[in-house]
Length: 156
Image 1 (tube, rainbow, N blue to C red):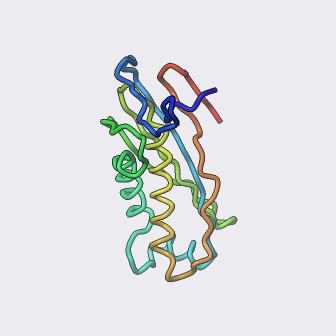
Image 2: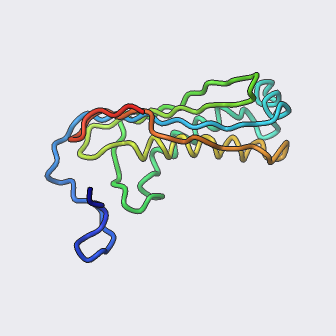
């Protein structure tokens, strides 16, 4: 397998996708943040002084999908047709799982957008809650699935 982001001289480059077909593409990524009981209770009780943590983080995650090409040097700017961030909370384990789904009709995939959306959402939770407890752990950020494009479907 060759690395496509390097030319024959080893220089970094953006992959030329102009010859690829436009296809419907979907990617889903997820990640988890482990928090203390105090942080979980503050989030669930809407008692964090910076505001509604999950709503703000949801908006931040969506914004992250739209800014991916500005953050990851070789990513193509994409016209997303949808981006959404949802959560699953485990009160007993004091964990919040963020799930990001990104969609486009284009020549390249949206995996990086979904991963950036999850990362941004989790970082926003950390930022909003760090005054309560800085021992939060962000973990297991990964691609769950993708559809479309030459390589077809992928499921983790």
